[in-house]
Every structure is written in C-alpha cells, then in structure tokens.
Length: 166
Image (cartoon, rainbow, N blue to C red; front, side, top):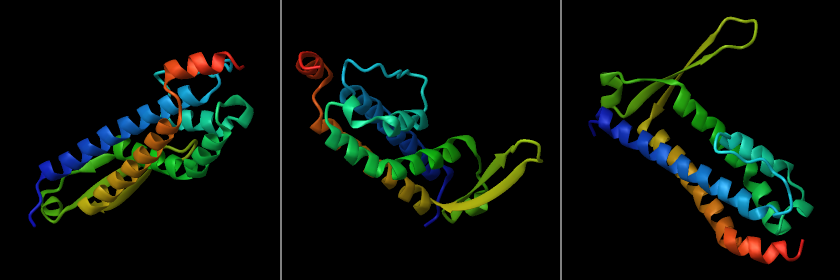
C-alpha cells in the first residue's frame, strides 16, 4: 500500500480525540467517586497525570465505592503509561519524510533537556500500525473508565443519595 500524509493525520486526529475522551471520563470518575464531603481540588487545567495522582492517593474512606477504587487502581499503571506515551505523541517532533511515509513509516524526534546536561535527541521510527496499536490502547482504557462510570451514580443522584448518609 502507498501511504500518504493524510493517513497519518487521520490516526493522529483519532488519537487526540480518543485521549480527550479518556481524560473526560477520568475527570467524571473522580467527581462521581469521591464522597461529597471530601475536599479534592480538581481543575480544568489539570493534566491527566495529575488526575491519576489524585486517584492513586485516594483511600477507601474517601470514596462512595471502595470496590470501584480498587478496580481503578488495578489499571492505573497501564493508564499512566498511556498518558506518558501520549505526551510523546503531542510534544515530540514528527518528520513527514515522503519516502518513509509512502511505506507507512514516520520518524519521531524527542528532545530532552535534563538539568545541567546537554539536550538528548532521540529518534524513533514508528509505523502506521504502531500508531493504530496505540489508538487501540487508549480505546481500551476509554472502555474501562466508561464501565466505571456505568457503575457510579450520576452526579445529581450522587449528591442527593450520599449527602444524606455522610
């Protein structure tokens, strides 16, 4: 198959949309899971990594359903790994070399600026199948967090049910 830039643009766009949805689901899970009498600072400017830290730091007595918290914490390492990889997809430089693109390949350059050392330039060659595989990983996490949402009361129901008992 002869690939074009547009084939990569489509996958990158889907990765962004899937990731935004995952981020939304995680925020919603936090809001619904935490007891209403607990003060947890959640803001629209938080990164997904910061939201995962909030989840990681939660204890069973801070949530309305400790079993769901336990289940979320089981998948947290995978979710954190995907979040870190997503940062590479967004912040690294992608080189659209026509010769490689036509073969379904693309180079990604990572610049790291460790403290007190020269920058590190790392090149990674990925295929369109690699990008699709990453998209599928995000999609699987979306499904899992969506399933957690299905197990939690809606925000309005949560407020009325749990405010009476806390």
